[in-house]
Length: 186
Image 1: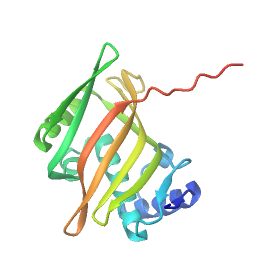
Image 2: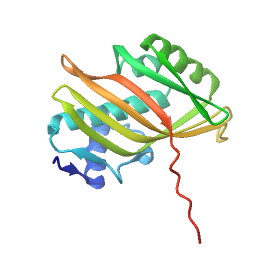
Image 3: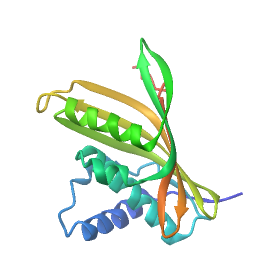
Image 4: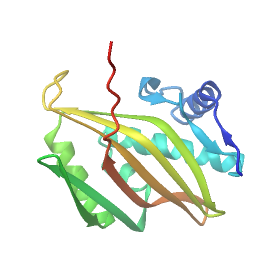
């Protein structure tokens, strides 16, 4: 059985230093990163772990900062993207191409003045030498007016990364509504 690495402080420090180095010390506030329940398959090479973690964070930041070109660059040209829409509490699935995703993200950027994407409970699993699966809880919050929430959702995001020559790209992405919200009683 594969052992899972579970050290939130260690991962936060390593990823924080990496992001800071890549951004010339101008890294964004790391409050949107929560590695409390991070689990990483230890059969994944150490350098691959860091590449995947930094790619996930750069993907998240580019989406949040509305950097459309940079955000789309994280996807493989032939990526399979499952878009879930929620109407009346029901999920509706659509299969998108990379180009279709760019159009949807552009519409989101035009609709909302600000977006905040938080990731927690990250799990990395090795599928093969060239495929790593990332699953995490994603909270998406956005608004049309500064500091006023217009829309929010909470779901499980799955990103399948494949190695394409010298870089990891998202080859598959899906999301489903998170339904297991705990109810606390006094």
